[in-house]
Amino acid sequence: MDLKNHIWKNEKEIPNNSIDDDNNGYIDDYYGWNFGENSNITYSNEVSASHGTHCAGIIAADHNKIGVMGILGNTNVKIMVLPIYSDNMLKEEDLIEAIKYADNMGAEICNISAIFVDEKREISNVIQCSNMYFVVSAGNFQNKIINGLDLDENKRFPACCDCYNVITVGSINEKEDISRFSNYSKKYVDIVASGEYIYNTVPNDKYEYKSGTSMSTAIVTGILGAYYYSYTMTIQDAAKLMIMNAKKNLI
Image (cartoon, rainbow, N blue to C red):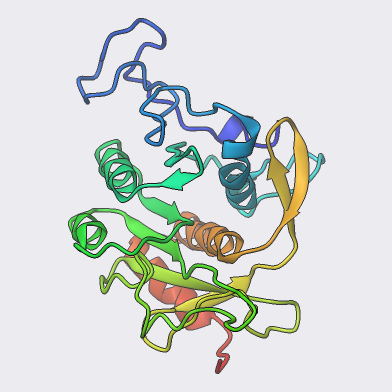
């Protein structure tokens, strides 16, 4: 219920007629495309959809006096559903194809709550050529010895894409300290946001607490969208204004 009114639809496609009506290379992609499973069924099961649904709710859950309210839930902003997660795996090529699809279909802001090694820099290349603005997670890492990776020494992508159209987001706790699990970087992390015990939507009209830079990224995506939605300016100018207005915190 919280996200129903904010799901993007490909109006140039006639659903379930087994024809690629808009000739974009994807058949029956009326509700987007599942790149992880190469299917037009964007929701396959509760487990695989939980992470994305939680992030989407942070951005745009309806202000309907039920459950939670997303940052952009009282606007006409639409979420383009493009899953890349399948069989407990994330593949770089699926992310790249999803970015190309979103770009081609007119998306303006891309939230990426995932990280990759990307040794061939293919993710960087497709982002650099994109018309979209990207809000991406710094990523999480924690074991008995290490709390968060220094991305200056351990590059992950798209977090370390050196492109003007990328904002990399780390996580902080309620005391405004960097979260123990959050990756960090003096060079690549542009902004931080709350990322611990965030309560929001999961499938089947339920709600859960989740933690991670994924949640922080969705918060920044929502705020960037609010700046862009509220002011007559380019996304790049909205991003600059958002960063300028952020509280300075030396981490």
